[in-house]
Every structure is written in C-alpha cells, then in structure tokens.
Image (cartoon, rainbow, N blue to C red; front, side):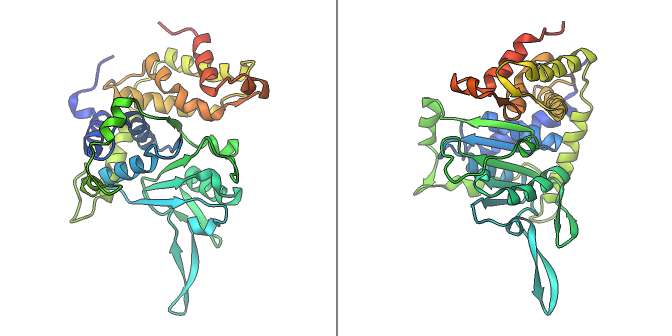
Length: 330
C-alpha cells in the first residue's frame, strides 16, 4: 500500500488549516476539531457532552466560521415546537409562503438537545437521517453540507428528555468534553477579550476561497465533495474490516452491556476509520485507526445493565473490553 501524494491530502490539510484558523479563539479542542472534520468528511453528525463552560458552543461557532459555512444556533427548551426548528407556513402578501426554520443551514448547533420534548427531537431526527424536513405535507431538502453539532449537559437531568437510542444512533460520534489541563486553561486567559467575549471570533477567516464576493457556501460544498471522495477512496482490507466488525459484535456479548452496538454502528465505525486514516495522512486503514475512533463512535450506542452502572462501569470501559477481546490482525 502506498501513502497518498501531497495533492490528495485533502482531509489532513483541511484539519490543519481549520486548526490554525480557530487558534486565536479556541485552545485545547483538538479532539473536537478532529471529530468535526471526520463528520464533515463522511456526512455524519456530532454529539458533544460536557459540563457548562467548556467552550462547546464556541468551538462549533469558530469552526463554522473557518469553513465559511452558514451557522445557526438553536437553544432547545421544553416549550420548543417542531415548527420552531423546521419552519412554518405564513401569510405573505395575502398568500401562504414558507418561512424556513433554523435547520436550513450548513452547521446547526443544537444546544442542550436533551431539553426539548421527543416530538421536536423527532423533527431533528428526520433532518439528520434524511437531509430533509416535511412541513405541511411538503418535503423540503436541506442545504449541503448539513452538519448537526448537538450538546448536552451530563450532570443536570432535571427537566430533560433523554435522547432515545434511535436518535443517539444517528450521531456518528459522541465526544466527551471535560475540563482542560492546567496549561491549556492558563492559555485561555491569554486570549484577547472584550469583557467576557473573545474579540478574535470576528477575525476568523474562511479557509476556502469564496466563489463570489462574500459567498463561500458553494466553496464549502465543493470542499465537502472533495473530502468525501478522498475518504471513499481509502483502502480497507478484509482483515481490518473483519477486525472492526468483530469489535462491534463483541459489544453485544459483554456481561455489562444490555444492548450492544447496532449494525449501523459498524458502518459508522468503518467510515470514521477511513477518515481517521486520511487525517493521519495515509490512504489505507490500519487497526490503530479503528481503535482510535472506536470510543467516540460506539460509546453512545451502548446501553449498560443497571448493576454495571452501579459499579461505575462506563460505556468507554465496555468499548475498551471489546477491543481487548478481539485479536489484532497482523
């Protein structure tokens, strides 16, 4: 197997340029940016879980600006209706006209997604899974690319509506955003601010060339197409494919796991592994690529038994056990 030529390093180059573009605003978020690029490259969605104040919203905003993509943020609340997300039919000049909701964008930040009722969550599920929404019986396609970055708070569950397994399974990856190391947190204090707000956020420039004055959305679509073509061309041998499938299937047989990873999880793990290989600058998937992305692809798809949770056994522990139980191909 041969490594790609420099001209084909679209994924790795995009990740490097994205990191440089957001550096004045965001520090210590490499794992989030990796997940962002992987999801963009394969057409997936990202779930960020972390305590308040860990810059989940800021990272999504800065990354969208760096891509030159349309960005909308929706604060999910218990009284939110599906139409608040998808849009409504309104009277305009005496005629019914469609008023698009915030879902008609490129990057949608669904803030505290578990605070809205299941009916609204299901509207987002259609958008994530089908790339379209249905309003008043009419189906409308969403923009391309379309990436959902959802956040949720892991420490406060009062008044929340936990996401059903069917919707969790729609997210390509779940990234746990914890407290940063001391040196990273110290570097945050050196970022330029105006009061509390980071002043450099408005200075984040798109990494893609504008097709017309002030218009980068078309260029983002072209970049996404190039990312996807490169990932799809990544070599996956039968041995590595069998390895990742065995990891997924092993999660279903662990004593601590009540519901293991779904067949969709195997497809998502394969796609994320291919993207991870390209992030590393390689044109083929290695077992290390699979192991590297397996926790964030599988952790939110596992349902643990109550006794395992009482023993503080975590989904990441189950993923690690599954990986340890499967021999690495040589």
